[in-house]
Figure (cartoon, rainbow, N blue to C red):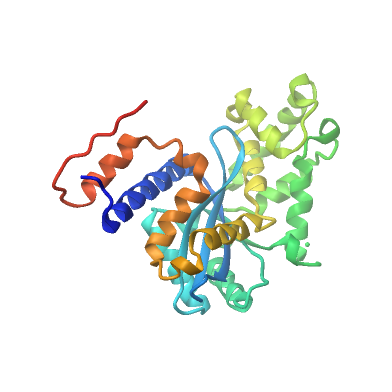
Length: 308
């Protein structure tokens, strides 16, 4: 029972990765999200697709979480779509909840990523595609309009950028989230919202929309103005850069080295989940990992986790 055999160690790491991912799924809940995707070859020349989720936490802060790295045997847009569908299905995610997709477009698969975003848009027109702002010279017409409308939510200088007409226009970009009746209610909420916040000193020194979102949740005004808060969340999850995905590939080079170039895809993914999401992994109890490990297959002995 020293647990030094490689299969046992892999099972323990897998159990830890599953529990870490479950924590992320609990944090996301049934909320809307965007997906960030990039591709790179690992040290063994396998094409790996890294997938991250971008969403707003229950506290109102914007977070990006590593979901998985997937080995893609064929680099066609349909193959990428199928791999993403399989990953979403595994974690009970739906394309109907997707509100943005971001790629850097600089990899050798940029043409296939263009095909991928088109396939997803055909299934969900609200999953707006954003070419990573760090890899493009020109912000497309649709994206420019979206950003112009979203900027009206910024709290700088006592909400001087607020424009109700543009914010109603922003809501029309998301017909699945705002019905016609809700658009009428939103107009009334926006009037009350701006009068309320402009006279509240707690909202006078905010640095950005993330601060605004967190303050709204802390003051429970997200409950008072739910449709306005939904607009803010949609603006926050709109992906503008893919730096987080690229950091995932930096981690991959640390985990899968030349000395460990035969590491399997599943083992690589499990290591990356726990390595990249250290913050979430620390929240997982030893008991949860041991219980997961115990139920993965029949064991000769029963492990008991000792908590401090």
